[in-house]
Amino acid sequence: MMTQDRDYEDILRRALASAAESIEPTGDGLRRIRHRLDSRRSPRSALSGFAEWLELHGTRFLVRLEPVTEAGRTALRRTGPLSAPLLALAGFLASLFSPRGRRRAGGHRGPASPPGRLGAAGAWLKPVLAVSTAVAIVVVGVVILNHENGTLIGVVNSNVGPASSGAGHGNGGTTANSKRWKLPIGVKATQVVTGPSRNPRVKSVLPVVACTPTPSPMASATAPSGTGTATPTPSASGTATDTPGSPQPTDSSLPTSTPTASPATGGGTATATPAAMVLPDSARTPAVVECGASPKP
Amino acid sequence: MVTRPIDVTEALVADTAMTRAAVEWDADRAVTAIYSEHYRSLVRLAAFLVRDNATAEEVVQDSFVAMHGAWRRLRDTDKALSYLRQSVVNRSRSVLRHRMVVDKNTPKPPPDMPSAEHGAIIQLERSAVVSALRGLPERQREALVLRYYGDLSEAQIASVMGISRGAVKSHTARAMAALRAVLERDS
Image (cartoon, rainbow over all chains, first blue to last red):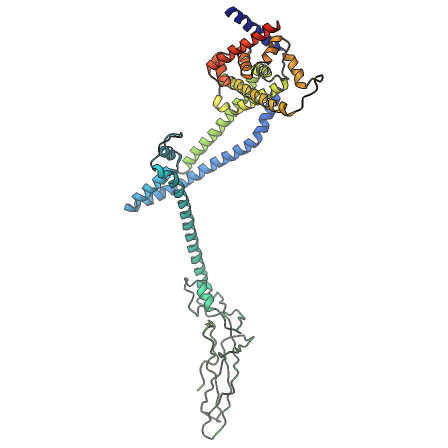
């Protein structure tokens, strides 16, 4: 039986060898293999090149960052008792998210790996920690940016804002100034006037109000006894240099001249001078409109 | 102060790149060397398994490409040859599996019209032994071809086929018994 088996084995061996000799592969096998290798290499080489670039520049960046992190560590150490928990927390977080730390925390690979340092809570604690850290970084960044923006705006306002209103102290912000610069109804901001700002090179934008008061007919003069007639001649003298439009509010806040009859010194003419143009309280314009600041005696 | 670690890092990165290039170059050389020595035998082995020369060549070329990609962890001609054999066997199985599915879904040609595959098979059916081998189950045929054409040991066959040595023995014994029965019946 054994010899018969060996005979069959020899027969099989010979048969296979003779059959194999009839099989001759084509000669361009190596060329085809190289062609396939090249076609595989072209997309792979781009990826691997990018990976190499990333590796090189990432490592460079980390190495350049090393002095900064070292300085941070040193500063943390200098802070004294606060540094110990901070350093411990940083080390703990680093060990959590580093691969070595993960291996240590998770134990060996496999389905029955024992829970690590974090225990059963580690499964959900890690993502929660990661998300909260990211949120904290974003919040801190936003706060810092806002702070920077506020400082910048304050600096700009201190240079540009109206000096006379006293609002340009840096922290005034835009809202307060914009409220102050609100114009009353019917009053138009017409011209840029170089106001008496703290910085003479900076032009302040002030609404200019020219007043051409129309003396009300109610202006009555009480002439001194018997001698003459009181002629109210209001003289408006404003500080504005240009008067393109005269404010004539139609409501109760109409600028009214309050003629005061002054006893005539000479020919008995009384000059009624409107004291000041009264603007509504709601307007609160920084433009100071002075029309005949003081009545002439 | 800062330049020193950067230099060290760049040197390390450059060293890694050089190693990578060296591995690539080494793999190219290995492909050429193994091709010139074993390509033919591997194609013949694949041809016994898939019963088609062109497909056998495709299978072996694919295996060479895979070996080139895996050269980083092989780095040895013997290991590479073993890898190639295993790859050829696995890919031949895939081809046969695919062919079975295709054969099920395509209409059969008329009996007087031989297919292209049939022409390739005729080459292998020169002897009654090969024709008997063709009728064996896939695993038994693999075991016999690797044992009596490839001259591999049971351990090597077990490694290539991905089965135990006992299973190799079992497959070989059953295949021999079936072959003998066929040959005795024919004779």
